[in-house]
Structures are given as structure tokens and as C-alpha cells.
Image 1 (cartoon, helix red, strand yellow):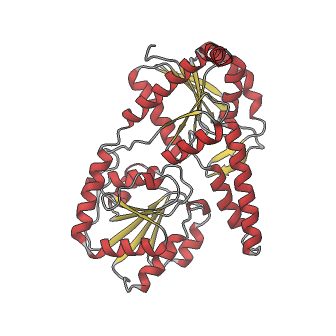
Image 2 (cartoon, one colour; image 1 turned 60 degrees about the vertical axis):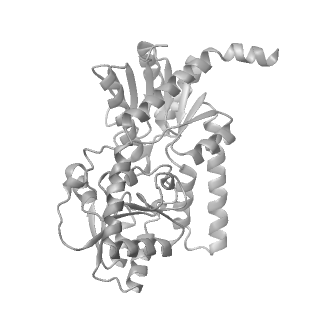
Image 3 (spheres, helix red, strand yellow; image 1 turned 135 degrees about the vertical axis):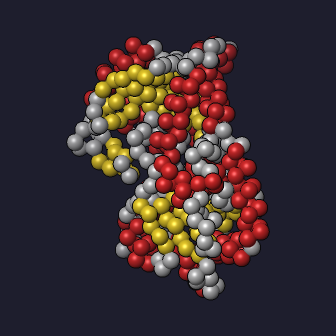
Length: 402
């Protein structure tokens, strides 16, 4: 089968600032570099088509009643009005396979039209939506007794996960960012599931972009300042450090925006808040860190951990979610079970600069091995596998019945 398979891609996040949008654009750049025919259907400010080399884009405008799901990301209940426009574009483009990325309005159109046109469908899992929702509900119901709030959030999490597994039964083959999710999806959907890790841009994120030379130990965070990122642990970590008489040795460098920023600013004593950064300012911020702390328990992967590593910054992550699969203990970071372990490792590296320097070097070496090209080579193998399974579906079923 030719490498130049025709892929119609339906990313739910495209213009937003998050890992899904970044990964989606990287996939498009990969296809463009190789001259592969590729159609990207996404939400945008206006409805229009355009073509750049072998890459075709169909932008679809959301309606005024679209409501927010995350920073910049919305869901439009009326998005299905674009069905016929997308159908015409698909018939013109003639894809071999359709690839969806989630449960939002864009992917729903992709899944429906793959079924209508009887096309092979690949689904990639990017966001632990059920866990995100549970963390936000926990924040919303803080006024209720603890056990009551927990019952509500646990029920919501189970039902959302159940619905997600039902949705992901539609694709023929699935992609997931870590082995924990690969196994969960195979068990929950019965679908063949391949690993889709993430690469990192080691030219954009590079320790040579460091601009500080003082003795301050900078503990960094990059991401959305929202409940699902568990960012209040940063304040708990500062309390632990202060309890160990570490005042004056360190400073938190917190990059990002979100509705938890005001609380963090009011409650943290030694923190600099930069707001949202991109481009060179973001690269410099990473390079200026000495240790990266990522308290999220819900991320399916954690691109920011690899970006920190590429900047020669070891990372501390929780023992829940995907980031723990990026870390090799004592090499490019540590996996922590609680805030006490976060503090212990932070203090150890703060006081042992020789160990810190070695881990910085190892973190950079690790990142250099995480090529985006190798990631997307495997994604295209999954596309080809899906096409093969779809084409042989009838004969396979006949063998089963016989």
C-alpha cells in the first residue's frame, strides 16, 4: 500500500493553546514535509476552504450559542449544520481514512460522515475528559459536605467515562498516549489500540536560551491555571519548603492563565506569574527554570514535561495520569505520591547542585531521543492498519461465521 494515503483529519482543538492543538499542527507539518495529501477540518473564526501545497483546510465557524469547554475551546450544539458542506469536501478530497481526536463537535461530524461514507475511522484519545470534569465539579461543589461532593463527582466521572468508551467503539483502530490508556481503551471498547506518544521540539526548547545567572533556584510550572491541573499543590509545596526553612533559596516561576491564578497570587509568597507566554519568551522561561513541577493528576500525556526536559530541566510529576510514563526515576525527574515527596526532591536538588547538573544533562539527552517524525511514522502505520482491517472486514466476519 502506498505511503501517500489520503487522510481526512478532524481535530477538536486547532487554534487553541493546548497539547491537542500543538500535536495536531505537528501532524499536519509532518504530512506537508512528506508531500502527503491531507485534509484538515477544524473550527475557526469563519467558514472557508484553502489549500497550501498538499494540505487542504476546511474551517467551520461555530454558532453564537456555542459554549465554552476550556480555555478558548467551545462546543456548538448546532455544529451539525455543516454536515453537507463537509460531506461535499470529503467527496471531493476522496480520503482513504478519517481520523478523529475526541468527543467534541468537530470529531462528531467526522465520526458520523465516516459511518455514512463507510470509510475507515481512526480515533485518538488526547484528553481524560472524565477526570477533567470530576476535578471541576469538585471545585464547584466545595460548599457541600465532603462525602456528598465526592459521591456526585464519582458518579459524574463514571458516567462520562462510560459514554466516552461507547463513543470510542465507533473507530476501527484507536491511538492513546500512554500504555495505561492503551490497556484501558482495549478493555473498554474491544478495539485494537496503538501507542501514540508525543515528540518535542528540541530547537525551540533549548537550555542555551537561559537568560538568568543568579543563584536563585527557580521552580517552574507551565500550563492552564485551572482546577483539573491540581495547581493548588504549588501553594502546598511552598508551605512545605517554608516549613523546612528554605525561604530565600527559591522562587516559583508560574507560566499560564486560568481562573485559579487569582487564588495562587493571593496565597503564594515567593512566586512570579508571567501570564500566558509563547515563542521565544516561553522558551526562555523554561530555560530559566531549575526544576519543573507538574501537579496534574488528569493529563493523558503531559507535553510540558518533555518541553521542560528539552530545556535541561528535570521534572517532578504525580503518580497519577500519563506524565509518570515520561519520567525515569532519578534520570530526568521523579514521580511523587504526595506533596511531601515533591518537597523532599525539590530540597534535595536545591542543596545538591552536582546532582541537579547531572539530571539537567540527562533530561536534555532524553528529550533529544523523542523525535516527532518517529511518532507520526507510527500514526501513519495505524492509518494503514485501519484501512487494511476495514477492507478485510467482510472476509474476516465470514471466516468467523464459518
